[in-house]
Length: 142
Image (cartoon, rainbow, N blue to C red):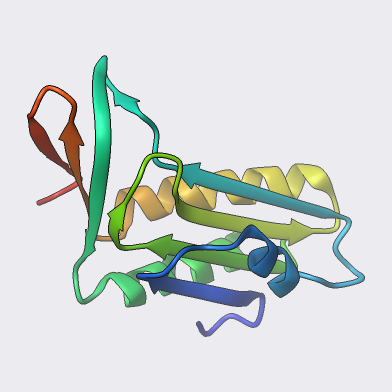
C-alpha cells in the first residue's frame, strides 16, 4: 500500500469481518461509505455448488495493492479497503470485502464498483468450485 487513502489491503486464510473494514475507513471527512461483500453462493450457472476453494498466485497480494492504489488515485475517495479470502470456504462464507469512503455517496458507489470489478479482473486469485452433481470447475485460472 503506497497511497495514503489505502488503509487495508490483504489476502487472508481466515474469516473476513465487515466491521473491521468499516473501522479501517473511519474518518470525519467521509460522508459516504460503500461496502461490497461477496459470499459463496449455493449455485452457479444452473448447477448446485457445495463449496469451493480459493487459491492465490504469490504475486496476488502485490497486484491487489496496485489495484487499491490505482482506485485511490483515479477516484475522489478518502479511503480504500479490500480483503480477499483464500482456502476452503463453505456456502455463505464471506470471500471478499471491498469498500471506499468519499465526501459523497456517488463517488463511493462508483469507486467501490471499480474496485471489485478491477480486483476480479486483474488479481490472480482462482476459484475451484465443487458441484452437487460431483463435477468441479476452476474459475479465473490461467
